[in-house]
Image 1 (cartoon, rainbow, N blue to C red):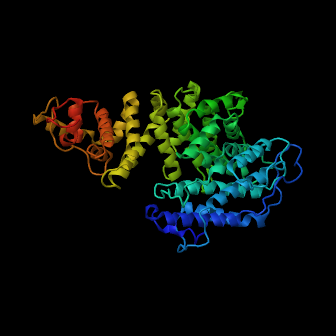
Image 2 (image 1 turned 180 degrees about the vertical axis):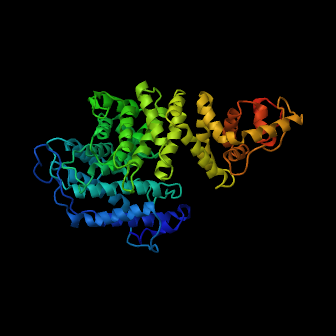
Image 3 (image 1 turned 135 degrees about the horizontal axis):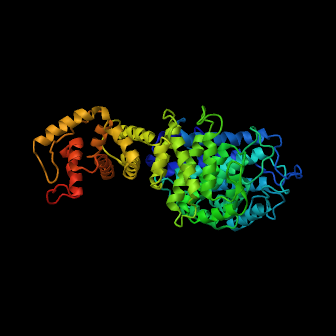
Length: 576
């Protein structure tokens, strides 16, 4: 696979022709067809232990070795670059992708079947027959009941992993803007159809709800790979993925399976991360899923407070409880190895909470006041972690985004629990990232600094203690005496404009490299959101005093914002 895929690794996507993409797709598909078992096993053996849960038989290493190698190679391609010279293979055909997808579909059904299918083993001639067989397999599969058989979990895990990677590769590469495959001779018909049937999506969800006994480190995490397949089948803006997502949400049990998976205790962190990613995606892309998930959570009685009390919980409460566990559990957060996925889980939960607040039109998931207080304390704990670990810093940026929508009362929580200073430190780093490490302006600049500028503006406007902390960091008290002397001298010159009593063109005290110097630089940034956010924050730190504002920032930097504020008259034709 490394030989056959190196064209994509060595080229920019928009340098590839339709023929290049077709050849590459055929290579991937043919290798997958070779790796998949020729005779997928069907209903396998007698029911397992008395509790009906699946058990691990001895792994069929000969069956899955080639399939795992294919998965490893494709995953490497998706995550890295490299490979040998790409070579064409004249034996490829345009139907290979569809054949590979059909065989994946048939292999999954064969592995989960608890009884022989009424249709021939995977050789259905049309999608309607395949959909019927999928529905039969989904209906007969019991996620946690006594009907389960001792299936080959290792092989099922490998097939599901290959399915998720195949859908991901198709979406990221062949459906990317650079590919633009529209020729009748290539992939004009989406080969992922059978992997995104409504019945198939529900089957992924039922497998996700599977009970794994005994759960050991060596066990294949079948539910996790099913969760990834569910995400890949419903993620995207194309018509097929949108339809699969809508049908899953509208189904009777789809959200229920997902919520049960979210609530399971003792599951591996990578699986829980994948489940939360599905929740985040559905909340963002399909807001109507929110009340359905809420209703699913209200059906059972759930332990929400670390097992101390049982009560019915909403989606926000469940996510918050999971968040608290993720960073308070042992070993100390965020862990010392990349295998510790708790930081990924925390980040995904924060993004899901942000999406909940943004996308729930009825705000049905808004937590109680007690829970809101718990969130504030948790966010302050996260902000107090050291910045040295990149994983933690990305979490802090997600906290910033979440706090932008927080109630004004949160400013008091942040002040009381030491949350303001870490936010100022974030502003210092983000402004350095834009002003010092970059040149010019871009959307990346706005994304880097606008959220933290707006958040500190909001906090400074709503809380005097927060205002003082931010002001002392931007305008340090130890240089205040020298600044006031210069300000007095400047005002004594008697130069005025409008209601501004000073006209110094440059800041009186903003040495290069200081935080105030970087904020002043942002006042004249090309991106309008960047410069307006910086001006508003500095204006607030100057107590809305136009003269102080000019003394601190310079008349040349301040004049446009002063015009917006009505403090000076701008020349005719100047857009404010």
